[in-house]
Length: 118
Image 1 (cartoon, rainbow, N blue to C red):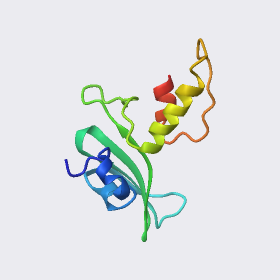
Image 2 (image 1 turned 135 degrees about the vertical axis):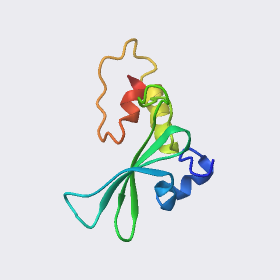
Image 3 (image 1 turned 45 degrees about the horizontal axis):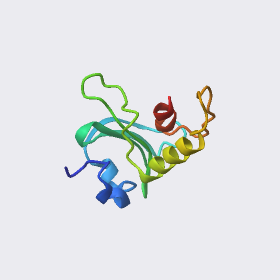
């Protein structure tokens, strides 16, 4: 599917115009910098991306895949190799922990890592 943000063949274009593909579901000027827009775009297969759109660049803040029935985030859907690496590292570091009680995660993004570990 052309605008599927989880398609690894498109990884280099996620931080560019590809993140603006799909149907915009939210758009408004930033309260911090009115020349920047905050937008949410709905992509193929239930993916959504939160992007900051400035005059000269697009910055992707996060991506999440929503369940079609419930509309809730799917914690096991990971769109980036970076996140997959972080999960692998966390799981290997926690392999000998009998029961996970608390994990400190700095930088939430879309909350993908805590959702996966929870």
